[in-house]
Length: 324
Image (tube, rainbow, N blue to C red; front, side, top):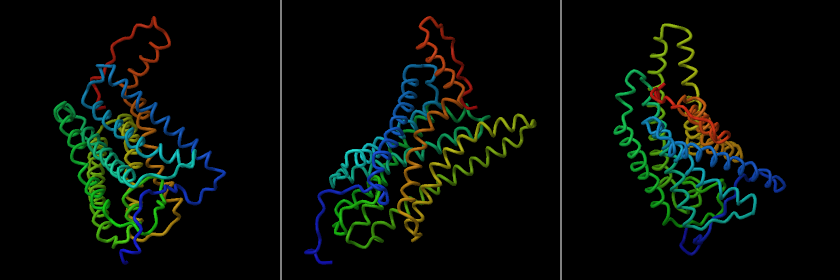
């Protein structure tokens, strides 16, 4: 294509769900706003608990704190814009702003994935938990998750930013991501999309393989428990983690694979899947960890009782068995 036919984009327009009728915009905006408020309340509540309660300053809770923070930042990066698109018909986003959003979408998603792998590694062998889950180990692992994972999103943004965009400025997505942006470039997508796809799949599949291997080790350890009641209790304890991991990794792998190997299915269905794995993990993580983790559950109940009854005298919460 000649340079004379190239139109340089100043703004992008977020379409969201292309098949959604305008009369349902308000309903979708209200649902997304409700989800975002739940994410804000639940995750900020956990952060407040961790900050105020020194009994929660344990390595395992520090890992969960990092997951909660990355989930909260991911949701704050993606949801306000799509809510504004449907509530106020404010669909435009600046050229630079779109790339900034793309970077943070992939960055916070990568951080959450790595931290989930750290959580699984920490609990995969309860007998060795005190030796593995030390403050120094967890600090180094979480720091590495936040520092090292920015390299790939930054590389994708830097490579895609100077491309000439001549295929329009309409993004068929709920937020800016690498695939939706580079599909508008008037260059060979194989030069930019395929390497990014390959790297993303290597990271996702490597983390998923590591998590599956760790869960196999957990299953083997659980099957060695002599009593049926003990085995059932252990499986019941691990099942919420498995649900969270499935919501994080399986839809992402499906979307990446289907988008790059030519599998055709409804754009709206693809976006629904994307929004499900973008919304549900941040919504249910605080609920699962507060209800399924004894120390968090007792601390939360104590805070509720204190707020409802100022004369209530709290007892010390036992959080010594955080690996269970």
